[in-house]
Length: 218
Ligand code: DX5
Ligand code: ZN
Image 1 (cartoon, rainbow, N blue to C red):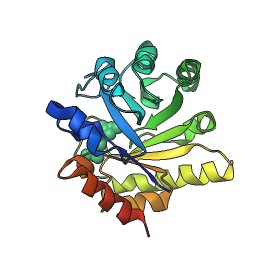
Image 2 (cartoon, rainbow, N blue to C red):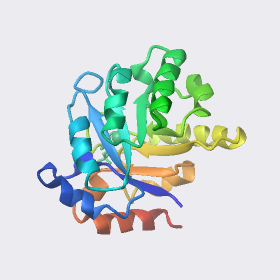
Image 3 (tube, rainbow, N blue to C red):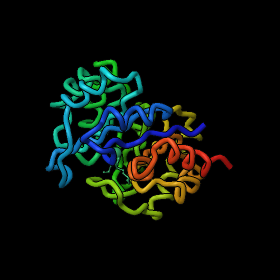
Image 4 (tube, rainbow, N blue to C red):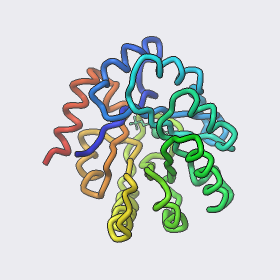
């Protein structure tokens, strides 16, 4: 079954607790961390995660859109993150990414790498077997509510094919513009996890999650 990861970025931050309560039926909660350098937007940090951690047992899927991610891994894990996903573009090369993944693993958290729309995936194929999740971006990261980039779908298909032929257990998560209109295409391409912000938090989150599940339940 496809998993749903609501992105808290689109929730009403004046009543986060209420927003989280409404998406307890989702398999994980996606937390977008932006530093104003790697992406042109700033969101929240470990102290917010620590606060919401005490309120729910849900799996926290932390997406670090930050420069020098190694500096902050421990802080985000201590705060309660279960998955830590870092961007390949925030690293110099594959060995540099592997150093970050080692650090994440040492903390006991699950590992993820994220790939931006213009970034090719093949240079990172040797890492795919080392991570729990590959997060394929279908918008340029930085903001919620952007349009799904259909041109990234072949990349999802290729990664999915590679994971299948290499018999890897890495899950494919897709992030950006995912909605009942685009989800079926994403799942058909091989996605295991759907990250969705505005499609879930705009309106009634419970009803929106039902609609999103229905759209892929074919
Ligand atoms: C974008 C973030 C996404 C964002 C998705 O940089 O990584 O997780 O919240 O929002 P929607 O689903 O509205 O595109
Ligand atoms: Zn994200």
